[in-house]
Amino acid sequence: MNLRRLSRLAALCAGVALVVPSVASANEVTKWNEIALNTISTQPPIASAPNATGVFTAMVQGAVYGAVNAVDRHGRPYLINQSFPHGSDDAAAATAAFRVLDTIFPAQDASLQAAYATSLAAVADGPSKDTGIAVGTMAADAMIAQGHDGRTVIGCTFGSGLPGVWQPLAGPTGAPLCDPSAWVRDAKPFLVDSATQFQSDGPYPLTSAQYAADLNEVKSLGAINSTTRTPEQTHAAVFWQTNPSPNYNAVARRFVDQFSLDVSDSARLFALLDLSMADAAITAWHDKYDYNFWRPITAIRHADSDGNPNTVADPGWTPLFDPSLPAAIGGVGPALITPPYPEAPSGATSAASAAMHAFASFFGTDEMTFYVTSSRFPGEQRTFHRFSDLTAEVLEARIWAGIHFRHSDVQAAKIGQDVESYIDTHWFRAAH
Image: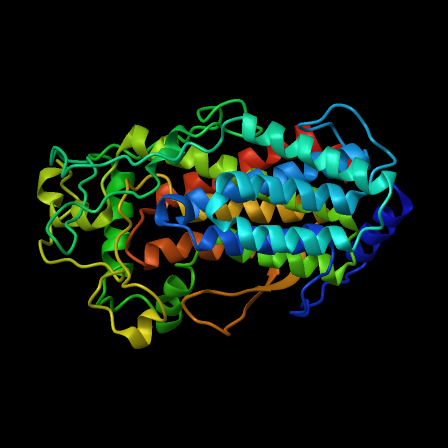
């Protein structure tokens, strides 16, 4: 660990925890991170849904880290085993990101080529630049060859209708609403051994007291006309219906600016963040389709079929996330609905947990003042003073929204923590 990293950690531990400014950082890692997320956001849902966004962002940031780490060796080799100490880390980072994005989204070639030309123009010509380009190309090619992009359309039907089994809801045409990025359940993980390495325990049995308690909680707190959910909880539930990857990567870019992280440190921060979130998403989506558990809207309306004497059916129960929610409450964007995929575990909570544990691992502390934003409420900033506080709020928000049972959120938070801990321990900890 070099003196710069030691002094940064010492400053953090001494209480330097400021709300970071909104000025964008200028290094090639953050520049291409923003380009990547903007590019992904323009794709159809099969690539831009939250779980798919996480996979593609990880492909970019993993390649960037692999390239920069080969030029400035500061951690366990990833994608490239050979070291190239005389290469340009700027050229390596830009090339790795560009080549991954240009390969998986070829329709964006013109804009990507223009951004890449700008990046290379800022690097002095010579052997260092040439080496950096070559290393970035190697890292991108290695990432693409790993086969994480498993895009394929997977349809769905209305299902069996049996108690406990996920029941897709009908869309505007009467056809079932299907998961646009169900392929993530079969995606190849990046750094964990398999999608089952950190598999969750699964839902409570329908006849258990724990299941009844969870159902009755969301039935009360998550109803559109709830009298037990506060206005602030309603707002928080809607606030968190936003794509996690753009949100948490924006936080990381602000950290780079706040602490003046160099290209090497920036590459490691984004790799730890995005590879953890992606492997947590792959794990969560594998579990979702393995357990195929019903959502609260179905469970509550059909509670008379669950065999539990402590649950009571309400055929007219409607969650907060329903198209009838007034726009003044629901914010900007599409109508809020119950997500079109199985319930357990929560994807949003697994992403939040993985991301916040990644930040805590990188900085060596849970205490940090930072803010997040939401696509539902442009311009609003929600401030936190601990990384763990954000995860805790997201966990509750999914219950307030009426779309998750508590046990599924708790299990999701554990997935995020376990995945990140494994990745940090085996790939990044020695470099902090």
